[in-house]
Image 1 (cartoon, helix red, strand yellow):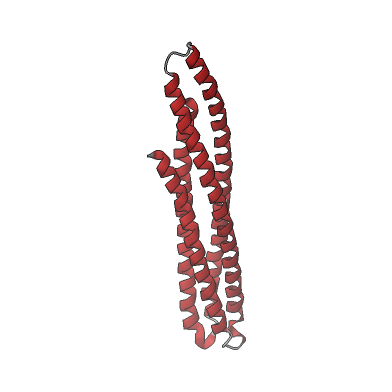
Image 2 (spheres, rainbow, N blue to C red):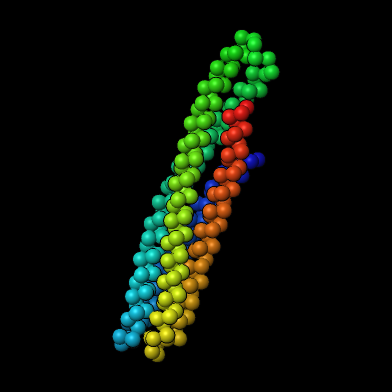
Length: 211
C-alpha cells in the first residue's frame, strides 16, 4: 500500500496547486474591483490603488508558477510510475533467484537482476531530481506568498486614507489578507505532502535496490 500512498501524496500536491490557482484568481478579481472602487475617490486613495495593482501582479506570477508546477508534477508522477515498476520487478527477480546463488539458473537471474537494479538506481536519481524541482517551485511560491501577505497588510494601511471609502476598502483589504493566508496554508500542505512522498519513496527505493 505504500506505493499507492506515494502516488496519492504527489497527486495531493497537484490538487493543492490547482486550488492555489483558483484562490489566486480570486485575489486578482478582488484587487481589480478594489482598484475601481478606489478610483472613485480623488487622489486620497492613490496609495491603495498602487498596492492593489501590485497584488494583481502577485496573483499573475503565482498562477504562472503553479501552472508550471503542474507540468513538473506530471513529470514526477511519470518518474514514480517507472520507479515503482522497477521496484516490483527487482523484488520478483530476487524471489525467483532464491537463496541458492550458485546454480546456473540463479546466476542467469542474477545477471538480469543486476541490470534492473542499475536501472532502478538511475530511475531513482531521476525521481529525486524532479522532486527537488517541485520542492524548489513550492518554496519559490511560498516566498512569493510572503510578499502577497505584506501587500495585503499595506492595502489595509492605505485604505485608511481613502476618505469616504475607507471602511469599504478596509473590508476588501481584510478579504484579500484572508485569501492570501488561505493560499499560504495550501502551499504548506503541499510542501508537507511532498515531504511525506519523499520519505516513503526513499524507503521503498532502498528496499528495491537492496532486494
